Image 1 (spheres, rainbow over the protein chains, first blue to last red):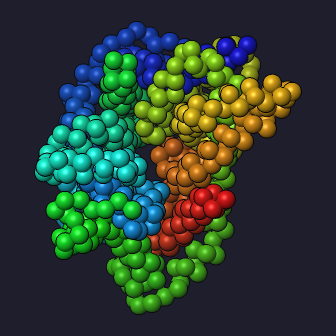
Image 2 (spheres, rainbow over the protein chains, first blue to last red):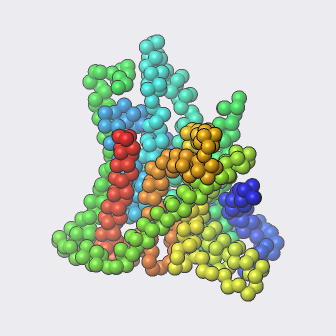
Length: 253
Length: 291
């Protein structure tokens, strides 16, 4: 009995993926039917080429990769500084605040400043706004990594005559590779999933994929919405697979 | 206390380097939030904005006197706490009762929903639970005379709650699975059984309290996140009452500038709720450390 409950649960958790792919490839799927009337790649072709979804995919990939890279670098360096700061606890508590706010409400709070600086409706503006939530998250994620051992290793290299650069190149970065990868993965996802900042700071002029999904739902175009949903789900799945493959390879030899 | 390193050592470079770093940190983390909230407060008090005529409490009086606003806050609080409790209970039951099966098949199945953005989850929820959705089609085929109930944009917010549980439950499962291993819950339950405890007794007195206590900070933090949930209630929620983020966004999007001022009042109130939630979280952590 428990085995079947687990199988049903597993199917329920995975079901959104096959359903969305099925809907995106359905030629037509009318109301009472349990299965589509044939399959076609029409919706993918039309949405990607004529609908501008390919551009949205590239824009979203560029924004999320940039935000993740900047968030990771800034967060990693800042976490090192905070890890040995006398006010460590207080500084870390501050990092929870922007992250805990609803992104759409936070975006409306900042909208005035972005409008005044001319950053609203631009890709750099959207990147900057997303960094404001990704950066504190990265600090929270990385600060635990900067323990006594890491500092001791860094110090050891310098005691043996190495420079700060050598310590980072030969010890810190190789040892931090898994957590950096995890950090990149997580910060990429925060940016990739974002709709609040994209809609308010982007003003609909930065056509990210989440904005597109909402637009297609509003236009009652479930097929295009399904295609853009699939595009939104694919990179996290690839990153998840790559991450688990990397960890397997690392820990199983 | 770890000593500073090498050339950033005890000479004069470290303080300035450190202070500069902390300055950048504050500039990126706290400054935008404080600046945004100050602007919201100033706007709500009539000090700035297109219709600014000097200090006034009018917008605050109007908003505080509107029962719909408090209904929204109450709804957000109920949905957030309901979703967290439901997802946590389900996760506890899953980890404690289905643990052997999860170990066999692997926990990857819990990672997959974590790769679904809230917007897509809401779209999926609409297609699963809507009047013409997948579930309704199956039920209508099996029981042609059965009238499918309203599960999206419904009075009980079943659609919103279901989708938010779908997004939250896998995370709690993963966290509790990790605690199950690191806290050696199975070993402790085995000891309890060998000392004469029944299966039910060890589950309720050993397994459940350990996992619950371990997950509590995350539950509070998720409660704060869910309090401000936007995409899911936007697509699957009702027009009235709305969850607070949806209500704030809707007021901001109106062309009536009076509404914008009210939206800023709501933003300041919402910030108060979030800060209270975070304060509660840290107070609990501090109490936990002190105990």
